[in-house]
Length: 347
Image 1 (tube, helix red, strand yellow):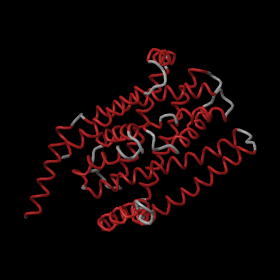
Image 2 (image 1 turned 45 degrees about the horizontal axis):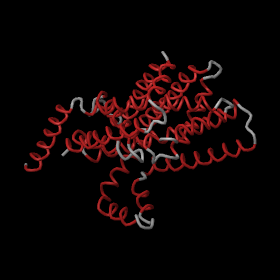
Image 3 (image 1 turned 90 degrees about the vertical axis):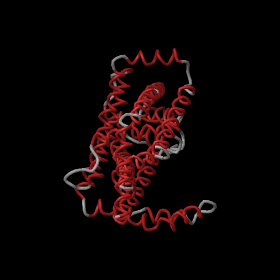
């Protein structure tokens, strides 16, 4: 069954890559010319994500280990699932519809369904939480570097209020758990409310255990929580290096801190359109708007969006290929776990 779902995820990713390649808004000769223009900077644009994924994987690895001396999952396995999970998230609509179920499926034979699910949810929460803190920090950075006009003050004020409200929501979730309360709120929605109500009634005990694990990370393992957060926030800052490398292709008159602001506002704009595969169109629009706000030519933003799109396709292909590496050993291990569970139940 796991092999079947693995193949479904794999072919879904392949189909998404084909759709993306067919929807590039230019012919391939022009696209190749833009990549050649990047020259030696392009390998740096692609390669910096190896470092970013490393920091992502360390953050998730710390969450999985949860203060234990030895982790039940090796770091290379976590790194592989990190790259593959993000590849599926980039390729599928609604973001988390692909990568997170795949990660849970792969970890369940090792950790059990409950712990695998809670570790993935905790990492997703940490990933989103670090984004929010990155956006909030960028508001302060913009105020320090530039002199905002009235419209920009209103925009920055709106972003600040949103980020503070989201941080409050997440901190409450980290202290008390948030799955049961979130599903309880969703169960009150019209039309779809019944679905969430039935899910809550069927899985309440399992969901309560997941909430307990979420609260335990912040309450009993604060050092793990803040270490994982630091690594994840560092990964967010490192994404600005990609923008810096791209901008250096076009101009030398730009600082790394300008690129931090471009990355922050672009990711904020892109996440508003999370339902779009690879945030098609939203990413390019976010680049154009963010560089415009910094009084940089909008053409720079369009070029940055294009090169970033090519880099994403490359890493999606890498992530999909990693899905098929080590499958034989994983399947044998999963089969062994299932047999052990059956023998323990019969005894």
